[in-house]
Image 1: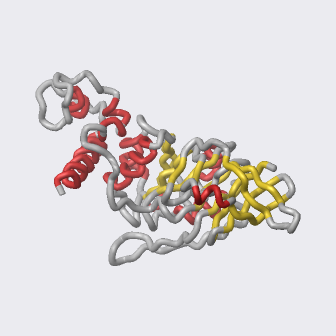
Image 2: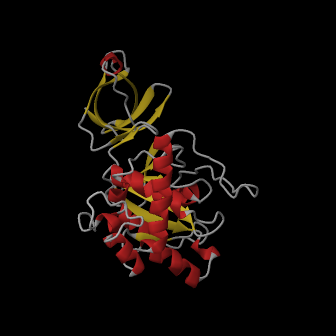
Image 3: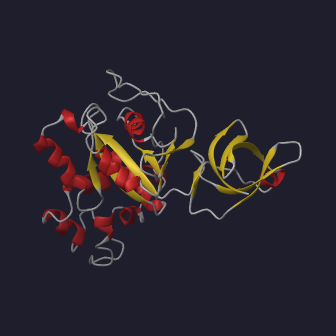
Length: 288
């Protein structure tokens, strides 16, 4: 019998099947082969004569993450706040780099857009609008939720982004009865207090499914090499092979087409500065 793992707690997996929700354990072969079952896995499940259910096999995965343990993600919804906390584009871009590395299309959701002026909101949108889909939303007023649901329809999506930006508030609007615990922003740090504690996938209004995860909120280490970082900025990668030097890092090299594009406004300066900051972080990590 086919099923979808929708939650995993303490070695037990809750599997959605044609006959209802079953609590199951994985066969010993998974542990023997070093395979960890994940929320989002499509599995073959069997109900034994004693009534217990067991997962026999996993279908081929589209993708897989260890922390948090999820699989078969179609899109990342990268959420950040227009204010409270103030957006840190270098940090936001780390989530986008993760999506690019995983070959998963990211969609940007600017929450709390009711807290800033239209002019300020446009400045934020302009940084990304030529690179990724951008949704302006408000968990408070409900603005942008219908647009977000259209992106989610028929997909399995995971929310990512810094703490305190309102991911749980938005999730509560798109998932009937989810009642996610919402956090507050610490006045001292201007960062959110983390609220989600285990991985689960929910059905969204209008179709589609949403992973609720505790793991896509921060990055201690940016997992990328200096020579490949530019590949994860699509507007910079578009100039690959066009610079005078093949090993151009787009810093101060003569004949750099990326620098020309930044000067000409074809690459947003905020994105370029984010690239420089993340490049420095990667290089510093390599030195130490």
